[in-house]
Length: 478
Image (cartoon, rainbow, N blue to C red; front, side, top):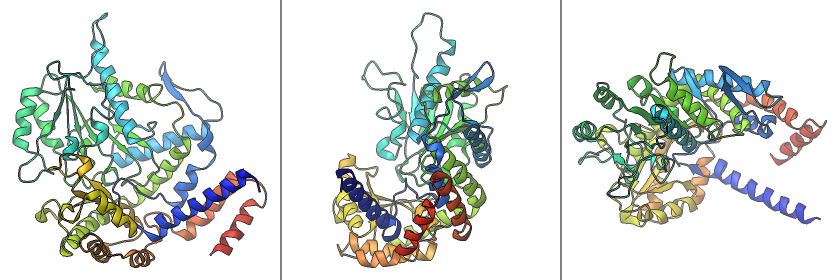
């Protein structure tokens, strides 16, 4: 047996073991992840996965630089239409391959937009002042100077730090903004870009409040909403484009049903004062940030957008109901839940628990993982550093797709309490509980999806008899 064969057999075994653990034995509660449906996964590995489709607008015409791209061109246009329906907007840019890249594309476009009126011969300027959520108060990494905002905002010569202003938070609830202080800061500082959105996300952002304040400014800021974590809850949790945001960004694989990609959306008609801003954003998507934009996952995103537009209302309602039920159950079992009881602790898919009194959050998260409960540790607003975190961050979106409803979270919360509070081992019990949640919902049922999956597989592996042989092996395995 060759060395290559040995390595492949070893890797195949490890892939099988990991997939079985994550898909059939453990509860996946990380808020930034999801499992795509069978058909979305197969679209991801179909022929476009190895292809290119670079294109850009030149003299008013969309020009493609590769042949054989008619299919994927139509896919991109159709995905723009489906995502436009989801957002209720007219303009969608799909080429960023992650939420972080989507943010960076907007920042690049913003700098280019600001420099359109720069006098000839003057150096290119960066954004003068940006307002965002503090990283330690739940802000998303990609909206920080250490993340995608790096090198796009000016420095304060007095401090040597980037000119970034954080939203003030309420003394009573650090997960909500202090609106009075926010109004004062806006009037005094007048940022050029305002970025909403968080990674530790329990409550809506004050988009409409800010939009009303800045609408009378002679030079209005661009309002951006990074919805990476709550994209799949668009409309029911918050509708930022209606509330006054100009542009929405996000990743398509957290609460949305898609593969790992990014998206930028907004409405910029020809008479919009920000029409040129949108043109700058598109040009920074390509050629500014991407060449090959992962066409297999683009095809997967189209199928995921079909699913989301078909099941949006039911899925969103169930996710939010599940999050509130899970938070309530965790508290009942003795775990300290962040947020306010009167709000049901959360308005999104996320729940935060404080575990400091039971040990370091990193150790607690590892303990939960050993018991088939996959979470991630999280610095809470009063923590000095992420490396000394007090919290565990939970999300219900993936297990909602696997069929869990409100009543199902009580048992899981009980097992979590056994692990966190009493340091008990419940690995086998949790594995057994997971067996009741193996069928994915909010997509085509298996009896319809499997024949279509077979058709896609035959197209990927066209050698006669190969798929039939694979099917025989699958039957033997079951």
